Structure formats: C-alpha cells, structure tokens
Amino acid sequence: MRRVFFPLFQKYVMPSACKCVASRMEKDQLDLERSVRRDRLERHYKRSIISESLKRASFENFIIRRGTENVFNEAKRFADTFRIQEFGLMLYGKPGNGKSHLMASIHHELVKHGYVCLFLDVSQLFNTAKDTFKFSSKVSLTDIITAAVDCDLLTLDEIGSGVLSETEFNDILFPIINGRMGKKTNYSSNLDLNRLSKWFEKGRNGGALDTDGRLIDRIIGSCRVFENLATSKRHEDALKRMHD
Ligand SMILES: Nc1ncnc2c1ncn2[C@@H]1O[C@H](COP(=O)(O)OP(=O)(O)OP(=O)(O)O)[C@@H](O)[C@H]1O
Ligand SMILES: [Mg+2]
Image (tube, rainbow, N blue to C red):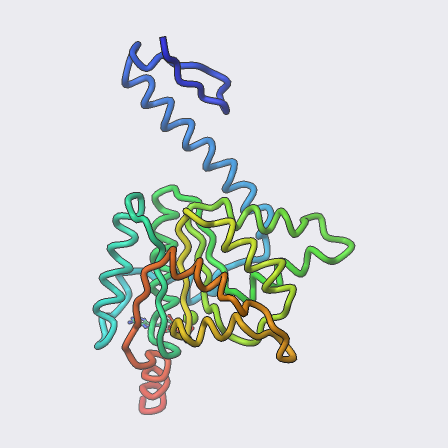
C-alpha cells in the first residue's frame, strides 16, 4: 500500500486509512516547514525592516486616485488569489504614486495568511549582502541568498535606482532572481522595461554587465507588468501641507 512520508515528522501516513488525518498532517507539515524557513529568514535579515510608512500600508488605507485603478485591482487580486497565481507582479511608474504602498499591502496580507515573505528595498538588499563580507559577520552571502530564494514571495522594491556594481549584479541580484525561477517575485520600479533592461546592461564606470539581457529576460518571463499612471501622492500631500 502507498504511504505518504512526512520528513519533518519522520512519519508515514496511509492516505487510504483516514483522509482527514492525512490532510491534517499535511497542513501541520506545511506549517512546520514554513516556520523553519521563516526562522531562517528572520535570522539572516535581522536588519531589514520595512520603513514606518510602508509598515502601515494596506489595501484599506490606499486611496484609489486617478491612474491607480488598474494597479490597485491587480495588486488586490494577486494577494487574494496568491496560491493560484503563476506570475509575480511588476509595478512601474512615476515616483510617489503608491507602487511601494501596494507592494507592501500585498506583503502584509500574505504574511497574515502564514506565507513566508520578504520585502526588500533593492539598495537595502545590497547593503545587507555586503555586510556579510565583513570579517565579524556571522551570516554568509549564501545565507542571505538562500533565504531570499526560499521565501514564498520576495518583493524587490525600487529596482533600477542608482548604478549597479559588478558584485551587486553577479553575486547578489543574479543568483537571487535566477534561483527564484518558478517562484513569485514582485518588483516596483520607476523604470519601464526598456529602461530597466538598459539599467542591467551597464555597471559603474560604464563596465558591461548584462549585455545579453539574461536577467531582464528572466524577470519578464516571470512577471505581469503594469504601469501606475497616477501622479505623485507624495507631491500632492506636500502641496496640501503648504496650503494648510
Ligand atoms: N493612493 C494612495 N493612497 C494612500 N496613500 C498613498 C497612495 N499613494 C501613495 N501613498 C502614500 O504616499 C507615500 C509615497 O508612496 P509610495 O512610497 O508607495 O510611492 P512609490 O510609487 O513607491 O514612489 P517611488 O517610485 O519614489 O518609490 C507613501 O507614504 C504611501 O503610503
Ligand atoms: Mg517606492
């Protein structure tokens, strides 16, 4: 008779014996496996905290401004149907119009439902990864990469700002995005796909990085891309403050 093995419990269950026992064990197994990955993630990304304003971001406190309708609906649908979604989301557009807010809302919603999620500003990822080069670091670069590859949803916020270094591209970004093939990764960017692909091509001092477009090809192949057409909420709020 076929038996199902649950490695973390070191137990076999006969599915035909009792369906409800098998499905309860399957759920316990998933919970346990998630808590192992969550612990590892929290250990390796100790310093990575979401900014205060993004901590409070949610779908409920997102105001549907002109140009945000489509991205709001897509983000909400993505969070509500995460399990059956095949692709990640990329939101791009002008600064301050709510891309990170929506990405953080998805992240918080999925964390609430028990998923193992990691939300990282790309420059924060680079800093965390480079901290491992210090002699005193107890965490290795492999730990950082493995934890980012292993989570259910990785959000890389603000990809495409600044100029990439060879290390950032070859040793950090490429292994993470490549390692996550088949998993869902969300991105926010100020750059559209053409500009983002150019961003990957040239590094600091004009050095060639991804001239063949290997990384942008992986991103396009694993994401649905939407433009947030709204103007800056940040700017609007600043103007309001000036006139108060
Ligand atoms: N539609 C909205 N409803 C409520 N708050 C919003 C909305 N759009 C933006 N905000 C708030 O405005 C601030 C800036 O938004 P956010 O950080 O999401 O912009 P962004 O599109 O990621 O900008 P950037 O491209 O510069 O990273 C945040 O505090 C966010 O919570
Ligand atoms: Mg942002």
